[in-house]
Image (cartoon, rainbow, N blue to C red; front, top):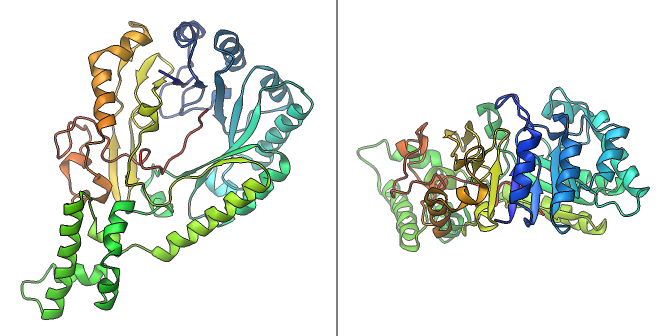
Length: 411
């Protein structure tokens, strides 16, 4: 095990308790050689009354090479808190700022205050500059959506001028149906796009749109042109099946390549500006990767909630509802053990957890997001996932973390 994420404070929709200090001490005794410790999960870590004590204790207890960090909304960072954080032994702080425009920020982050957040960020950066030997590196996390993506290069320039040293950019995971249309990543994976591109010229020549295809499929008697159109679609499906890919006909025919290319140009400009300021930047995939990689499992991570329950990854450590490409998705948390009853090592080595990691590493799960049946599939849409269409008992076929869409704070 190399990485541990601990949710020290609750969110409004989850648990209502802060992590107990003695439980945290117990955890530290068992993770002394880890590479990265993240002290944030769903809630705001600075709400915990002893968060600075937690950081200081972790710094004293862990290997000097261990990176300690957390995400924050920045609202509680005043001068005193900034000073304590700079001297605490913390290595990384990523402040969530999705826009530097007052009106847009207020639209995205309701009940927040950009002036307060920026003042807190500036305070930390100023304290760092006056504290030789501090370990703390200031960063910003940005959640991308249609509302703010065009301003991304401008934001990077803004943060570079203020002394931010790293940036984490992630796509939005919509928890509300009204937000689903605001995402900017492609609805089709690289594999689906690669198959479709082989037939792109024929699709354009025959003017095959999704609405045209949809109307044909309603008919009993079809014309020769319509039959030819269906033939092209069938060729795409056969090609996909032959190479082991999935193609969602609705999503691929509705794909707006110009918009995807525009996002690519924005990312290129963003990376160039970040390099100019010598800022480390993590950008997400625009088109979901064909080759999946679960960073949580490959980097041997565990997730611990405020009560001491252990989970295998970010997607599965709380129950929630989200929306993906027009459909509702239920996620049920998957507990692997209870630290109040077992040690981390015992939980890590028990058969249930070992099998989960082995199954994930096989990557032998369907590409649910590219499947034509995803919007009506009982396996995918079940509130209580049991298994997928291939009989796998891990709900990873519909995960977008492993396709590079979502990014998290890391070492």
